[in-house]
Picture 1 (cartoon, rainbow, N blue to C red):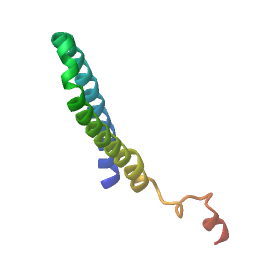
Picture 2 (cartoon, rainbow, N blue to C red; picture 1 turned 30 degrees about the vertical axis):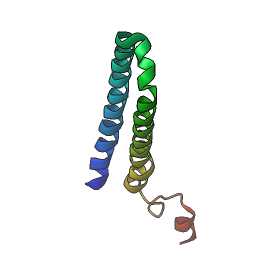
Picture 3 (cartoon, one colour; picture 1 turned 90 degrees about the vertical axis):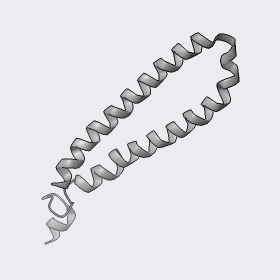
Amino acid sequence: MLARGLRLYNVLSIGALGVLVISGASGLTDYKAMLGADFGRLVWRLVGKLSLSFCLIMAATYLSFGLAHRSSAPSSDSCPSSPRSRLA
């Protein structure tokens, strides 16, 4: 049950993060065009926010691909070709 839920979570969470990044990038491009030369004053605020967003996205991707796949994968003991099953 948990493995099935995590598989669905992996797909939905990574897809949502992708949509979030793309929509934010297009919004930022429009905002930059609207501000023109005044955009330079906001650069350091944006660097902080974009760095935080990058760290959060990397953590969420690690949770989805790193931890969720390990917990939903079958254990090596049940695999017929594992070294432990050959010794028994």
